[in-house]
Image (cartoon, rainbow, N blue to C red; front, side, top):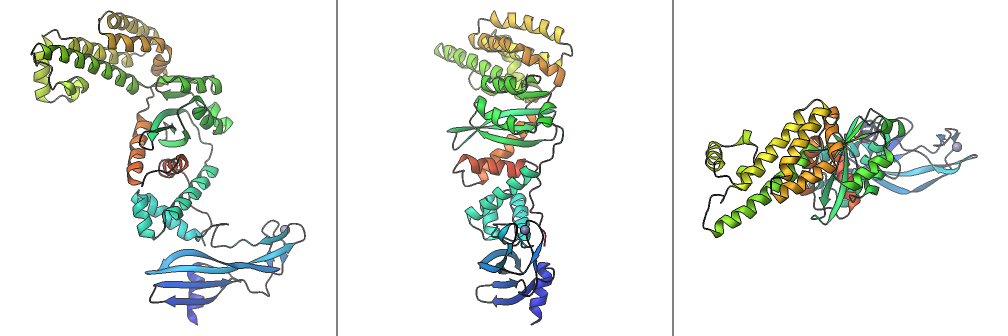
Length: 410
Ligand SMILES: [Zn+2]
């Protein structure tokens, strides 16, 4: 019948592969196609290419292929084996799929596109009519392919961030490329070894080109960088620093509000967001409120001023001038009689050298924070990650900018 030749062409199978049987099941909406290598033709050894007659056949296997219209389409074949004088008995390579795959290369391409397109594994499962394990398997192979092909482009600035998963019970270390926003890799935990593992996997030449790493003031990460990248600057991320200062302001407000409420004074009631919002983003109401509170000599007002003052540091160009500025700020902070502010001031002083490196590199973790929100999306769209490896694979699949398609395209 004509349909055998039609299917051979649709599958892009080159001679002498032939389609020997096509069965269409109109009830189950299924097409089954049997593909055969003619017994009288010689086959190349997959190792050396030397040609042999077929030695025997393996058990029949099947691969899911792209659907034919609404018909789920399966390819069947008993893969021939040859007996190479040098390499022994070997299954030959088939042009439609990678070794050990249950899907044809074209189907895997489609599945990758669908997964990327709907950014939602559950939805992709439904669209492709695949199980969770099958989707995960396709994703996993796609990421392995991508990682093995990743080229050694320049890696100048990287960011390290921790991320919680499994309902916040566990941590992961996410390392990203700040210039070309993508996740380089994800490691278990937030220990020194976590970051070391990722850094060790970066090819030497690329690693030598890293000039700075943006991170929070987190000792284990600092240790890993000092040990493995001794020439590389550590830049403590200004957004993390700002977060600590905001938390300190909030602590001052809470304590002060509690005291005032005891005396029946409600000045600070409901003002939490005023102190945490960037003044440039204040609403008219907040501006008015601030004006009112400004003259009341509140502790939170002083704490807030110190927090705002600190951000001037990022505007400096020269390290020496910035150091002088910090000295002054530190004096104010430690003489403010506001313990939360003094505490943060001391932490900042201890890390000052790696804060001032910002002036040289001007990098922040903002890029990795952007990736973090993407990771958050992935997490909420997935049915929860049963283990760390699944989590890592999903992040790399969506945020790794990897070349993940199987290259066999027949
Ligand atoms: Zn051989």
